[in-house]
Length: 276
DNA sequence: GCCACTGTTAGCAT
DNA sequence: CATGCTAACAGTGG
Picture (cartoon, rainbow, N blue to C red):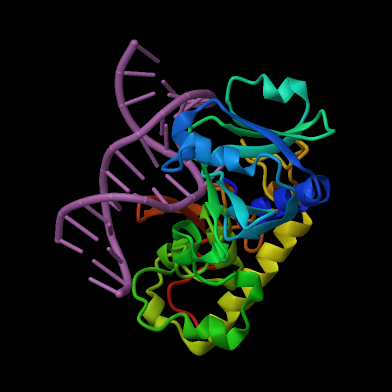
């Protein structure tokens, strides 16, 4: 569930709390979460000070002293919480980081166990395997660069928006909301887009993501911010999760279909396959 | 109880 | 190379 706006919300919440703290200990309760890093390697960040907390796509990057980095991916159900004892004792807590002089800790909780953490020693964290292949940040992209992304791209618009090598950070909720905002059908072949439609898609992407960040992300089921609070953007969803309910724009019933195995909700009147 | 569904993506087949 | 399916897992709702 955590997509770009949710991860941005978590990172914004953690940054003022974590920056400058010195890591005391890391306890791992689910070894597979550490993937190919051995648990002992994770322990190298003990004693290091946190220098920055950043986001890249849906990944959380914690920069520590001496070119060491912690990288988290929350996948579907992960939470990264700044928390006290109650959360630490939750049965789905997979990893806990403690800090010098603090009783609160950083807790990684993940019901479905898809999430992971990595520890890197590198002068350029963007070159690691998890970050290297990500497409550009949608909110840093000017219109001409956005249009350039469509070179050699085929397939359906919905699948393209979900492709992290095309744009980083968009998932199923925001793909549907962006397509509604741009008034484009999810099955539209990417190659068929006119320049005008690409401009609309670019503008819609920026608007939807910025509004979602301002609302603190969408809490459908699992998402919580770094303090355990819920986002508010689910109240503003126009099509996601609203199949069979009236379109907020025209009143027609919102429909859903599967695109590449993913549910896609859209308005059959507002989002025609061919338009303009 | 059983089955279908869920916000992600790595890995494999085409 | 690009694109399309599925499995990995646990929980929820019909």
